Length: 312
Picture 1 (cartoon, rainbow, N blue to C red):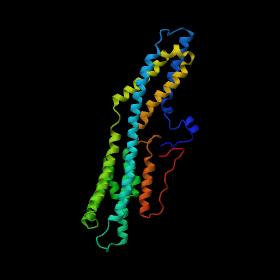
Picture 2 (spheres, rainbow, N blue to C red):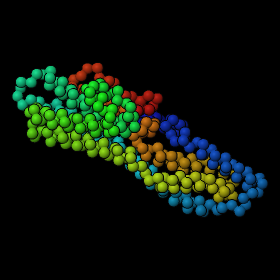
Picture 3 (cartoon, helix red, strand yellow):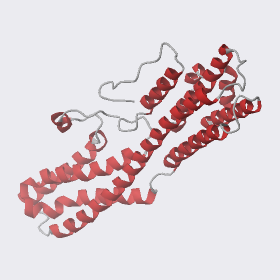
């Protein structure tokens, strides 16, 4: 995610903008407008040019369509951020529940064994967060990060799993059941812990819904075609009225329409690694630090900070 700079910096910023994706289209349309202007003004071609009225009507409708599509894309982006905000809260709550609700019914437990148990359960939640990030980014080969938080056998078992985060939640639920059967979780506390796991499943399901259900292809294709046709035909309709300034006007209009079209594509998938996507790595690191701090662990990893204005 790109961090904002000053107003002047935003005015001249190129990194993280859609300019890299649309500059070729904009230059091509501007070149077409320059050729049309020259042929019209110098050689007298295109005297029977279109009137600006159709472009005014189409441009109005196209602006509405683009606004609707971009609002839909931003809703997906914002819903993804809310889901990961919920993941932060549920992870913190689950860590608190583990540290306060799990323990022997009698005070004859070895403190070292109890601390090891609590560390296992909290670190499994940390592993789940990192694994969910890799799952949403299609980084299925990235399980090395999990070795610091899960037993070796559990990490090896994840190799054959299609949905690794769900497998981690399954193991966490099994451990809660084992601790309940051994009397280390009270009957009233087990539903509380199970409720946190259910909430995590719901959060993951929401993220997977966004990832696997893009905006309908036919709608996206229609918008792309309308924008391309409009920008290409625009110089033929305004050459009479604008004259030698036709290329400049077409440049500004095409930049606006192609830019809005590209923004909708860019924020439609919020879980990737593009500059405008959600900073899942930063959020994951924050959860890890918060949960390990509750265990009073030393040598915590540093929070991620923007590098070159980009927060991953």
